[in-house]
Image (cartoon, rainbow, N blue to C red):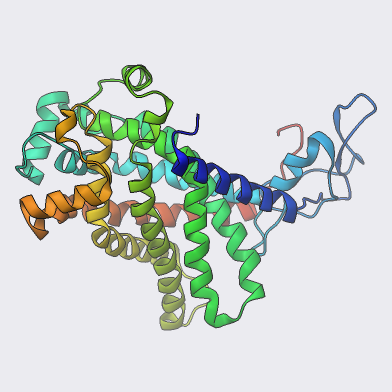
Length: 369
């Protein structure tokens, strides 16, 4: 069920992180009302004046029973936004960025996919191939699978990162805050990886032309590889995305600090956040291109002869370097950077804007939830 021992470790980490959140967070209600249970076990609100501040993080009484999840989601973190608010902000930011930049991601995947030929696919050749095989809509192949996997994973990643970093940072010295940020980013990615990988596998195979639809892909993977097929390339994804997430979140946090110092402002503008997010994404994307290349080839090699398949990420990088030289490891780097600069700008920019909007949002009634 869990695909492999490595995937099982991901599930364990995700469970431990969830348990941490459940144990350390409460939720409180505005006006003293609270969720509880009546004699029949039905979730009810306490005093009539009590309404839940689910997104804004208003203070509420500690819940029990069926109301616990709702109340945990309404718990305010140190920045004043609730855990539920961070989930929503992460979901919205990821869905917007993924949808906007999917065409460039498709081009990158076509350039990096596994093939029987060792010949490189150029940027222009990849565009031509996508248009020939699927027309203009070919650039959106795998979009549904991508959003389905990425948006929930983004929600989990941001919520875990904010929860962990805001809980740990006050307990350590200022000098260690950078280390805390990158460590929390790594743990947050491991926690969300069990949700992310199946959608990533499906998306990349559809982009590479292995499957024409999600239905075909799901059926084919089940029949030929079993459930563990949805976690193909799990180790390669961790090897790529743990360093990427650490660099991305850590660099973005440092750039924001530098931006506040240079501008002599306590808060950066939305334009500043978009620009700094793009810089962080572009730099991180270029540095991690070899790992991204190996991950893509491992995920898209199902159609190759078994003798031609790469055994693991080490074998993949070694063979590419021996066959194509060091430059071969940066195949698709231009497309990756051109994709990640606007992607990360949208990603962090919309995330920051959504957080600000949720903090100002009106309180949500329990009946809405």
